[in-house]
Picture 1 (cartoon, rainbow, N blue to C red):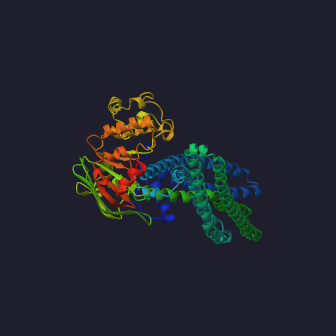
Picture 2 (cartoon, one colour; picture 1 turned 90 degrees about the vertical axis):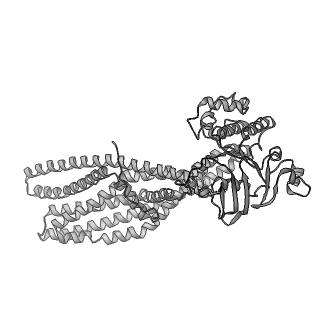
Length: 585
């Protein structure tokens, strides 16, 4: 069945739960045909179901009056009502399931898509498992709510309204007694709602922590085993798991208390109807059949509320899930999509008095720097000096607090972000590889690159001895776990090389390699660098010495700059690093 949503306008800045829920309803109502069928089916089943107690009342009076022919007609009519109700329920479930799954798919797609474009600072301090939980667990919770809980609530409300109208028709005075406990019900819901919501917010938080803990343990299994800290991580998991257990117990207990209170109020309502209705029966104001109908109506009147209390945990979990998913969708991204494209880098990349901070900590302090086309620029300094932050700023992962970064005289924020980043090839110390084949990892940015072209690139860079024995269809494993350091680095270099970037950023690219692989990788890097603009972050001395210009960075400031020969004089910081370490940290 093809679903064609017609999206209604939605305010993107709303952060209150009620407005999130309204947004969700608009997502559902966007599927006009399905929504019409669902609402019609809910109303039909609710109204038809409420005719049942009225028929039971008439049947009771017929039994007392020994009118068996009428009783047979009523029995057939009662069966017909249930058949019609079944058909309506079936249509409601079918169309609600189709619509809810389409809505959830859309929410997941939009949330995941926005996660690709949010700035890196969004991920700072966030556990990967918590974010994963929002896309998977929260969306699944919301799916159950939309498919089952929401229709039940709507059907229940429609049933209550239908019940009240029929009760007024049968006996207005007795109806007043029957609904007199509604304020008590509303007060109970109002008083307990905040506490229940808080408890289920805590449950969602604990589930996310649990997911994150498991994910972190699996990703770091080698480090855990090599350090012999299995027991420590087991203890940590038991603590997190216990916190999750306790949060669920508290939430379930509160929900159970709420359900019990509602049932007590229901019993009180039936007692009032029995007392007042019985008096009217004795006074011959109403028949026994009408009293029976009223008792059934009161029970059906409370059933939706009791169901709501029984499923309140799901409702509260869903309300939190709605909010958390929309928060991801609404998270502002820093991509420029309508900016101008860059055909080529022709002149200079410049830092103009750039200042940048992580939170309150200043990392880059009024930095000015020039990277000319075709030059090899080395950015060196001690650990924590701000070198990698500079490369992140160049790639526009972060925005400067003050100052500008320009390419060929144009602020990089004015360029189409994705097109701008395609100018760069990045080779890191610890490259990230996706679970798949070597071939898939090399051309993951452009699957149209022919395999023959990749083989030629392997040969031209002299990487046959590293990649050749494996073959392009070898599986790299999660994060490249099946490959050695040298093999991972070779894949990283090839990944950058096949896209033919104009600017190469190398961040500690060979610092963890053994001597044999380092020589091969170093040779491949030099071949790859020919004719390109190179930005070298804290590399080995051999690469630094062959740079055209060096910036010595400390605490985000340029302390020294110049050509390698100029900085080799005694007394310079570069000379001290050269003499003491023979390589740069």
